Amino acid sequence: MQITDKVFVVTGGGNGMGREVALQLIQRGARVAAVDLNEAGLAETAALAKGGDRLTTHALNVSDRKAVLALPAAVIAAHGQVDGLFNVAGIIQPFVKIVELDFDVIERVMNVNFWGVVNLSKAFLPHLMARPESGLLNVSSMGGFLPVPGQAAYGASKAAVKLFTEALFAESQGTSLSVGVVFPGGVGTNITANSGVDTSRMEAASAGAKPRKTTTPPDAARQIIEAMEKGAYRTLIGGDARFMDRLARLSPRRATLLIATQMKELLG
Image 1 (cartoon, rainbow, N blue to C red):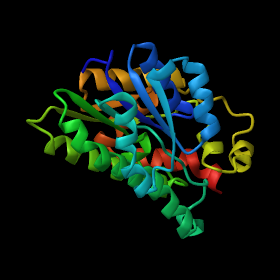
Image 2 (image 1 turned 60 degrees about the vertical axis):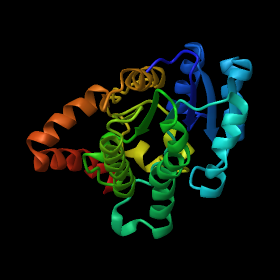
Image 3 (image 1 turned 180 degrees about the vertical axis):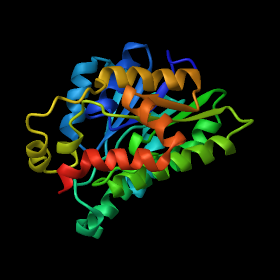
């Protein structure tokens, strides 16, 4: 779909990939409603965008269904319409095994990563499907198709996003709505801090190791926007995601054990 002069809602717009998606959409002549829990982060995004009234910011928790259901009216009042939704917001869990993982942490991760996507999708679907051309893109993760020890709840939430999006794609055939899912590998964002995760254990375990190559947030955002533009069904971001996707298809057990070996020192 065309990007210029269209109106897009972007969750996670206060930092990381979501911020970069919002900034690049503005640069390409779109109008954007940036959504995030962090008001200061949204203010920084607005300052960087310099988009005038083409960018509005909306501070809310994507897991707060009541607040989310009120969002379409606010976006339409500001921009007149909604043509696309990018569900980018997400958090990770502490790097611990399932046996050590508290129920409230699991629920928080599922509420933000899965229910946040469901809430936004349900809120905006009627408006998107009323447009002559529209798009909905949900960000899953490499962890959504490959189990990562120490990130079981995160992976489960992203796997749920994957299947939810694929079902929505199937249900949207014959309509004006294009639906796609994105699977980033390692992206150089500050998701650990934004998720409130203590990284000291991880940093100690990786001390002296060769830095892992990651995709930059601007590059990831560019690929996410291109996926919306092309109406792509499935997009893998990063060489790590593409390699592990192939390996997981050819030999799921081997792929699982490979990741388990890489995570063994971190988890103890």
